Length: 348
Image 1 (cartoon, rainbow, N blue to C red):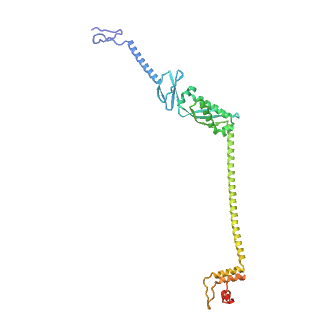
Image 2 (cartoon, rainbow, N blue to C red; image 1 turned 45 degrees about the vertical axis):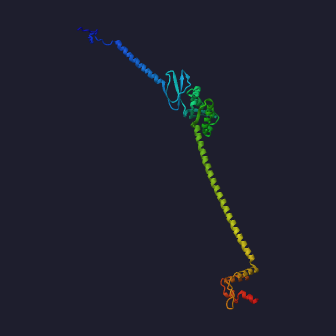
């Protein structure tokens, strides 16, 4: 068998048919490498194109699309969407409640003092139906034009019309509401669908010397308020004591009037009784007393009538005008042993 060698001196093997079996050449190996690179490049390009074309929109947002700089009329809702890569771009616009912060806003008062408000928070919400019109008129960064710039303008308008005392103390609680009303009034005309829910303004920063003066002034106001409250308490206590004295005086006057009335009634009653003590009236009372007795005994050996010795003594004293003695004998009451009726019969 004939031996075949290559130019490098290496023998070549023979195939099954007896012919020599030649290995791949260098050009063939290069073509295979280029194919692999090309396939990898195509696959990578497809991946890049898919990555650039597929995008996700979060809940509470709408996507607006630009193609060649022109705004497309079809916003997309939440979810995954596909667009032409490198030709079409999108911006996500929030349609739920959001808070925009405006920081370090300068403000000049009517007196020429420059103050700075550290932060102003504007809570707002954009209606989904108004997204296209607002983005077309004010771009996707509409809040910069409609909120940030308007905040600067409206706050300077407010400060320039009021003094530092009013802005920093007296009217500070009204700044929030004034800014909200001013913003909403302009938005109703310029951008219907954008609603301002609330505005929060932090305390302004004022020069340190003025701030110390305000603190001293507030301290003096606090002292004055405390003194005023103490004065009111003292006045209330004095008024209470005065009312109590009036009530006591009225009670004493009422009791005195009552006592005077009782004394006058007793005096008048005693005077009337004194005028009644005439001989005729006493005689009438005597007969009435005798007539009121239901038992009278008659006979030769018994008294003609039983009478209480004290009543007899009192009656005789009244008739004679003498004062009775504490101890009276029976003979003093009935000296003759005869009753008044027997005396009257004997006389008759």
